[in-house]
Image (cartoon, rainbow, N blue to C red; front, side, top):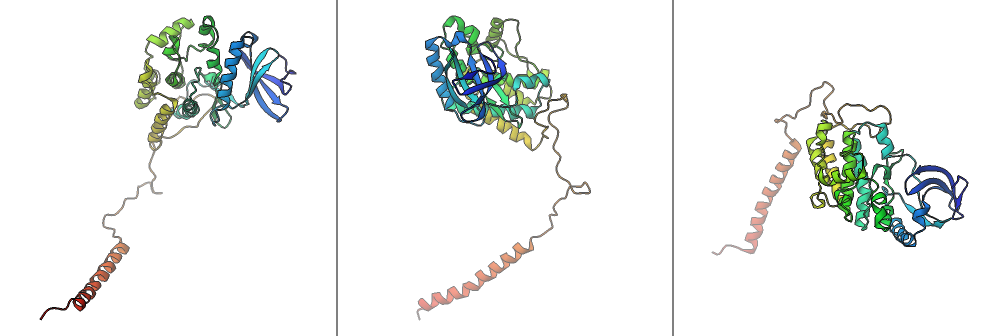
Length: 351
């Protein structure tokens, strides 16, 4: 397709955003609604299988029902010029993979903020009964105002319907980030997405993925059998509590992890709130030279202009409270004779 191609007599391709093994992504103009969109056009060899086309439509419908600030919205899908296509919200900015190429490793606050947004979007899909199956940095888009949006819900699930001989090369095409159960050929669950988020967190905090190998087969074996190096050995600035969260997320058994992205998101939010009052936040994202300074600094309590904290005097008395108490005592005491008079009026003593 060229930049002058018109898809479905409505979407005019303007430029190429990216290419992959299964599809090409274009920026285009919706001539009907007059807005920019992104179009993912699947390669022809995946578009000609009728069974796959039907399953692709089913997954696209499910993805189109997702409406969340941290999920790229699906507008339309169809088949044109022997190609399947899906129309999505156009998100300006960069994906997380591009930011990782620019930043050696992320600050702790940066990681928690971005992964918290990831968990919010993926967790929403989990509540809707959808598993992403292919969480990776390329599928996490970050806008200039630091909003993270997850893309490609339904695509990996649709590709699961192709013949088993191709599945290892296509569905599980991100061996650095898929879960041990996916590596073993077992159907993924929400806990599988949680594991993939954990791999991304590990890479953001340490500057390297937990597993590297020369072949996808070896990577799959490592995901199933090898424990990752302790994150603090690679980055001593990682707090021990955060390391424990990360180790739990990367458990080999799904039942040992957080079960859904919502659950992981709540844990990360609680941790961030616990440290908010005692640690200083660095800037969210920098695209220049990465600073190796500590991600958090002690928070100093406010002081007086002289630099001495003001302390309360234990001898200072609250005179207003004391006065109100005295008035109450006088009022109550004055009512006692009145009550006695009323009592004896209606109950005179017997003579």
